[in-house]
Length: 179
Image (cartoon, rainbow, N blue to C red):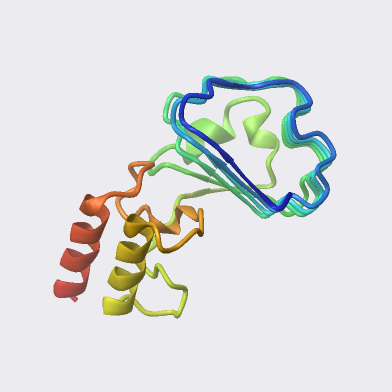
């Protein structure tokens, strides 16, 4: 199993659910999940990306410990809470990307502040990763909306509202027209 999509309707990711899923590289957690259990993703050594929706209100002890390949944690959580003990211990290369204006709050909240790097979430308009923002990005975004792309990346969420919709297409078109 390389990629996991936690669908809408799942409220809790239980303790040890994906413990030692060593081939797991990406987790997409749908809005509506409220809790991540103890050691839920621990020792997923190839895990590189996690997206945490704003609906999450609890992350238990060691939830992502020893995810040594983890490089990117995108947190859409705006009501910053104290997590369980060391949820990101031994994730040496992880950067925690947080909503605009919340870096100081995350840095001052116990256990979030143990992530090595905390930065504001970049505004990404280059959907297809070619280094430019242009009509090919709009086409790729429309393909995602129509279901002809199975990529679960958050890079499609142009307006950072945690969902991919026609408003992302309109926002991207307006960005291109204003260039």
